[in-house]
Length: 273
Image (cartoon, rainbow, N blue to C red; front, side):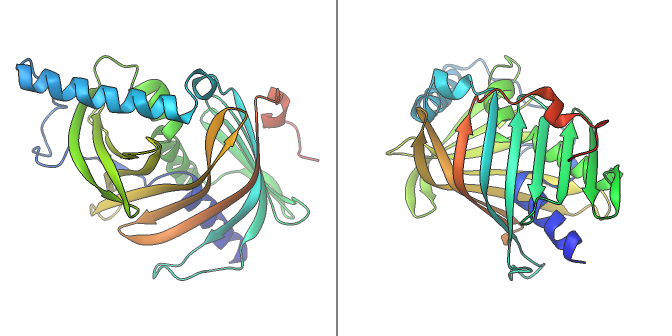
């Protein structure tokens, strides 16, 4: 049970819910992704959205942010139950990440619990040994990865078929924010709330439909306590919510970028040491 809670914590703190993506609010659920309209006001709206996103990328570090190839993080993560109450006392973690699809998380004091994701495959190592990650859990991870901020900025935003919408100013995390929505060609949608002053991302939201129940699920990830590290603005508190209930929180104590993490760190065929 303890391992299950930690798995939920990792999933909640890092990625999103499995399900069928929904269109932008207000669109029929059966409608294809809306192309950017040709009317002058629509073009101006998309241009404004792009300007806000470009400003956000500059605030994050510009080329330094866009050229991140690998990350090493250390910190502590916490899981929460279905009522949003703390489900455990938290666990120390070390995470190695390499663009675009390699991820390794080592948990507990002696790092004896290890999850390795490489492409579309994954292994888990515990005191029971090493075995493939449960297919359902892997599917959840892969979809969460597809909505990650790195994927949204590096892939969604560079796809000319992605539609951009400037949704105006609002309040997010008790700060004045600008709201921008993006709709990919496959109808997946994501909304970013960007600090109107610092221009850093505050919140990321998207809505899916649960594969088993058919219910709508809103996934939220918030970013706080930014620190400038190697020229990159790095959030050190990341919190996830599912339908307004906190599901996971990650506190990052140290971050190192572009240290040259070898691919062997993510080799699924080599037993972790």
